[in-house]
Length: 253
Image 1: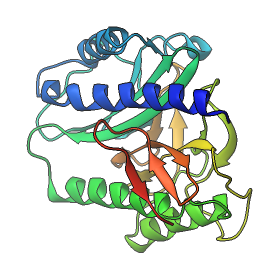
Image 2: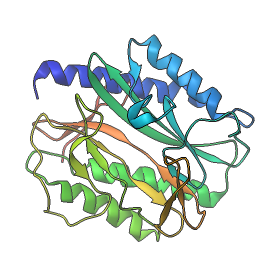
Image 3: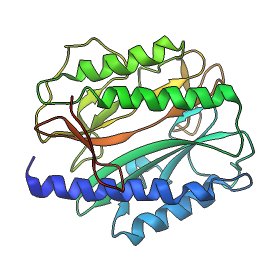
C-alpha cells in the first residue's frame, strides 16, 4: 500500500478513535441507541468523513450499538434505552477521502457487575495480546492463536463466525483475522498491510442467533458479549495502532 493511502487510512482511523472517545460521556442510563447514533454521525461528519456503516448492505445506522447479549450489528433504535448495569458495544466506521477506519469499544453503563467487568477486561487484554504478535513475517495464525489462548484460559466462548478483516478502500478486505487459530498458519504479514483485529467474546457458550431484522446477532444462551477493535498498520519494526487519538501506539513484535 502506498504512503498516501496509509495516511488516509490513518486519518480515517483517527476520526474513529476520536468518536469513540467523545461519545463515552453520553453513555449513561436513559439515553437511547438512536440518540447515540445521531451523535456519532454528527461527530464523524464534523471531521470531514462519512459513516462507513450507513447504507452498507442496507444497514440503517451510522454505528452498530450492541447491548448486553447482542454480539454485533445492533441497529440503533429509539426503543433501546440504556439502563444502569448494562454493557454496550459501539462499533464505528469512518470513510475519509475514499479510505476507511474501523474500531469498537464495549462500555460500562454506570456501575456494572464484577462478572461483566471481568469480561470487558479479558476481551481488551485479548486484543492487546493479538496486536503484540503483529510484525513483518508473522502470520495471521499468530494473532488468532494469541487471542484465542487468552480467551479460552478464562473459560469464555468465542463466536468463530465473526472475525477481524483487512481494511482500506473497502471496509472489509482480505485477510480474515479469526479470533482463534494455530500459530504459524495463514497468510504472512507484510509491511504496509492494514487490518482490523477485533476479539468478540461471550461470557457463556459461543453460539449465536441472527434476529428477524437480519442484522442483530445475539448469544443463543443470552449471556453477555463484549467486543474491542483496533485498526492497525504493519510497520518495519512491528505494528502501529491507528485507532488512537494520541501519539501512535507502536508495538515491537
